Amino acid sequence: MIKFENVVKRFGRRTVLDDISFEVVKGEVFVIVGPSGTGKSVALKHMVRLLSPTSGTVWLNDVAVSRADGLELQQAREQFGYLFQGGALLGWMTVAENVALPLEEKTAMSQEEIARRVAEVLEMVGLEDDGDKLPSEISGGMQKRAGLARAIVCNPDIVLYDEPTSGLDPVTSRTIDRLIKHLNTTLGVTSIVVTHDLHSALSIGHRIAMLHGGKVIEIAPPEEFIKSTHPEVIQFLEAQFITKTWRKDINV
Amino acid sequence: MITRDPIDVPYTTNPLLSLWYTVAVGAQDVGRATLLIVQSLAGVRRLFSKRGRPAFVEQLYTVGIASLPLITIVALFIGMILALQTGLELRRFNQEIFIGSAVMVSMLREMGPLMSALILTACVGSAMAAQIGTMTVNDEIAALEMLAIDPVRFLMTPRIWALVIMTPLLSFYTCVVGVIGGGVVGYTQLNIQWVQYFDIAIDFARERDLYVGLLKAVIYGIVIAGVACYEGFTAAQGAVGVGRATRSSVVKSFLLILILGYFVTRGFYNG
Ligand SMILES: Nc1ncnc2c1ncn2[C@@H]1O[C@H](COP(=O)(O)OP(=O)(O)OP(=O)(O)O)[C@@H](O)[C@H]1O
Ligand SMILES: [Mg+2]
Image (cartoon, each protein chain N blue to C red):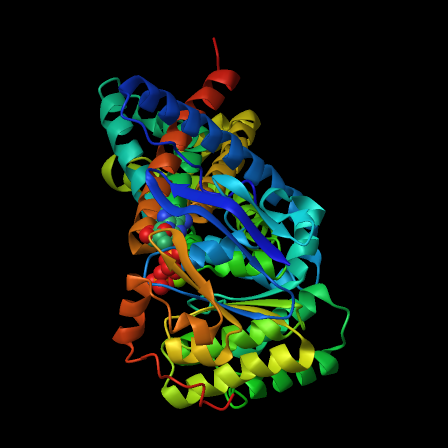
């Protein structure tokens, strides 16, 4: 569904993505892990041409997103919901207004329908009581959940989650994991999740890719990922106390 | 979005090539900023829609009212300084009663638009660059794009039109306050009667000077908003990027205002 073909991205003299190729299949939860600063967010932005590759191509089905423009790009982007790493809420609008923004600008829904839909997604992310607060009045974790609500409010086919659970407490993290899984299984939302949290990666992901030094060094389903022999992968697993005996025992 | 993608500067150690890239990137910057200005001005219809109007009114207020106290003080003192300097000079020839004309003409032609533009750059343009730069760095602009909301029309159109409308008004206001300031100096320092001062001042006011001054103010308004928004939209990573965008927007606006001001003057008053 989304295919990276020899994608290279340089910022000035820094190569962030170094000849990356992989494919995300429709309907799967594809998790990208990797140390800070390896270009996970940059890779995600390439999927909707918020950044363009220095060379190589990003495909969405048979559209070359990395070269798309105008209407073609807009149509491609409309299939996506995007949770940005920092939430990216507009500071002068309340949480509910932020979440309602795509509905108001894009759809012909009535005010009541919009209000109902907004209340529904805010409840899904556990912010039902915070709709009329400004982003500056809520915590970072809440901002992130509000961003998540905005990303899914239009029922997109594909959702890009940039660190959906970082900065959240463990209990809320599992709630968000469950939400991602729920959207995936009930609505068939193709999900691409960038995370540092291996527990959530292993429990929600169908496949896990590890990015290191600008390269994809491992792509495998969770059961195989934890058995990987790659030194970087092993180091990454051990840092989070995950050994080869880790079982998928979290109920999501 | 193409107008706001960061420009990739290829890395090179060759000094000639690197100079060439600098020039090429500079030219590209100018071109893209111009395009951005045209796009944002073309979005004027949004200002009258139900969803666009509140943002526009807010910008009119921010630009027009918020900088008023500072503009008043600066205009008053500019007028007073002009009157004092020319008055002392003219007194040597017993012609000090003509300070009204000197103050009026220099305010209308140059000082009114220039002073209001410089103040708007410092007060309003810098804040614009910082705000939009912060939004860029926090991915808020990217988020708008993902929601199929054009950031140029959503953010820049109300700002640039607010400046296009408010800069001439403030420039006119600056002239009025400046001339009054000149009158105060004339009355207190040079023994010129109010009536005499204003008679001569108004006698020497030419419509043409007023129109050229207002035209300049409109150009300055476009420059201030154009530079501030372009710098904001192209801000690089992090707080450093926002700081750099803000500084660079003030510097570039200042220079462009002075340079364009000179050429407009030359265009209208040659020979
Ligand atoms: N617009 C940009 N201009 C210049 N450099 C950039 C830009 N965006 C990202 N980078 C650089 O690319 C590198 C990768 O950044 P990225 O945000 O993708 O990291 P990440 O893997 O998401 O890390 P984290 O886990 O901390 O979010 C960083 O070193 C960053 O400085
Ligand atoms: Mg990131």
